Length: 398
Image (cartoon, rainbow, N blue to C red; front, side, top):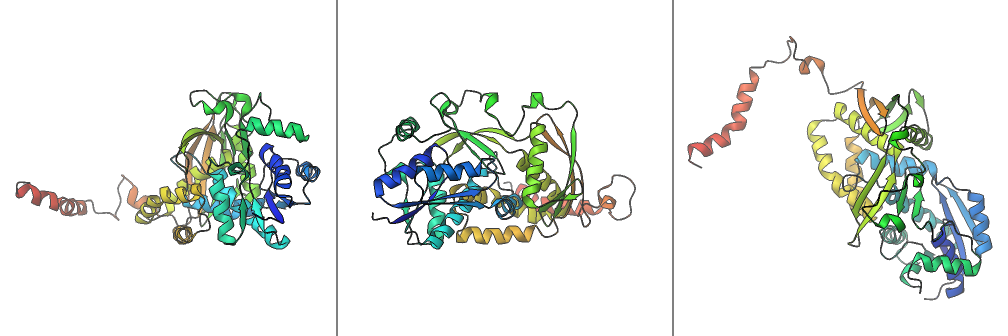
């Protein structure tokens, strides 16, 4: 493959640092480093200088935090997306945005190729590349993990040391992590043993439930058409709101998940996640839906959650089937407006109140006390009609 100029999705970590040097060595091409700021809490200027010192001709540091939360995190939230019952898709949501920004730079710089640091075993390779081709069907894609001679991250560490590239991973601490405004994910190394409990010192967003405060924290979240807009009466931008809830949730030990999930390529993988603010939002969003959403609309939407979550996990964010599903989700969120009160206590997030200006919960109908709006005798005919098909079967001896 002839490559003149390549845009690399660059994080400054072990893999992409080695890839930057390897691309120049293997292809003799110009390498532009692209780093999307989606709240990874790293020194971005240090990342810029590291990329330049490793050989990048240019570095883009792209602030996408508000877009990430507004257009990706909140969209998945409105869909109720949870993969295999536990994973709130923090990495899967981020990859399409990074790839989108990368392709914008590739177009601006007239690059003929893009590259990423995802391995040939994981999901991220699919997420990156499906997005690349969605924006440019003719783009050249370089996936070093599917090409080079290195077989493990230990090989990468040795190569980095040989080339004088500083890396944050050492042989004594080989697990990897990925952080953004929604979560931190941990995998590989000592975590590859699914029986082994993650070490407490590994976690960075949350305290352990045992060390959380002995007094509960109450928080109120306001929604407008399914979108969280305020916390405790204070309106915030999407990124500010999520960061605020991350801080509160983290202090109370909310949002730790340890699961073995099914990767797209077919193998199982153990992942450990911290998603404090996202966990709070998912529980609150479900609570406001419960008081505002029609029963049959809710059941229809709920039936689509596994499919939407799977498509996000696999990387089909910008594909036609997702566009259709997004439109349906948006339609279900009209009127999902109101406030949810939650109690956070030692890893638990408990709904303790909800209210809505146009909620479908009506005390006059729900009450067990004396009322005038519901005739309980109507239930007799309702029950007999629903039992009719079974009565006929029994009358026929079936």
